[in-house]
Image (tube, rainbow, N blue to C red):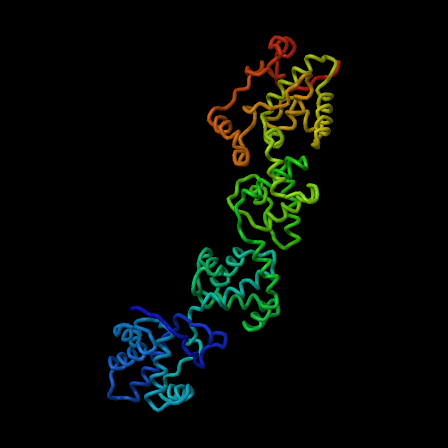
Length: 465
């Protein structure tokens, strides 16, 4: 069976006004079969097959090719729904060859022969998604904190209460307009939800939808998906310029700004996107990240170029990375061994002040457990602050002490090989130091001095002498 509708089918009086301009693919076959019974009642010498042949000829005249057996199955009731063009052909056949002039004559004939069909049985089971999309957009715009997914979940629950079971994923596809038709019950439930906003009918909803066209366009634009790589680069540039390594704090700032615009994203989702753990993100999230970074850069500077320049320095990126804390503990033990009059508390205060000079904010109460060996990892700027405590220091953090992270390999190809080696071969921390080719404060000291003064490297704080 091949159907190709070359022109719009005139709407009959039983269809809603909003459906008069749309071609509904299929409608219930009750009215079609009732009109067929009227035709056979008026022409008593005719048969069902003769009626089917006339319908085929009628459809062929308007450019719709239909098989005879399919028409006969529609007449017998073996198929629950029929194309609207087939129903229109039956109506035209009655009006043209049986002395009827208007639809009212057909309705009277149906009533007089006991073949009347209720309005509920005439309504199409499916409607075009072009009617649903404006209602969905209006519903989401009037409820800014609601997403299409949450709307699909709510509709699925409401439909289940009415005995209609539709999977949430399939329902979300229908709400997104990626199907040509959808169940009529979805349209009815959307109108029920909009009635709580003071919208009483579909016609009112369309008027309101056109009135809020700009707001709807902004809502749609903000929620479009885009590759997350741009967000990661902007976030790294902001962290470097603002000297803020915490993705959690940045995520909280972004979430507050998005909430002001009516976009409710979870804090964990935003943080995962900033850390490079998401493939796509909302355009609105990127826009807010650009706004935050633009506020820290000089006026008139290109944002994309400035971000690329900022993240092009590996040393500044390592400040944001997680690094191993045991090497810092060993460096602290060496520094204290060279200064018997100093305490670990004093060293922690010294490191906090050094980090403050570097532009970072931290507390000596946070640093002291790292020096004492209570922590397994810390930020790279703490490591670099520790290196600054030694004369003729080298500020570069050893690459083998940088822990793997999601975003570092993406924006810093130079350390991608190092990250892969680190995942395959864990670094062994020796209590007497590290053997490296380049002399560093961590490896230049004599292991005998540490073993002589601090044979026990268990976490403890030193008391001043």
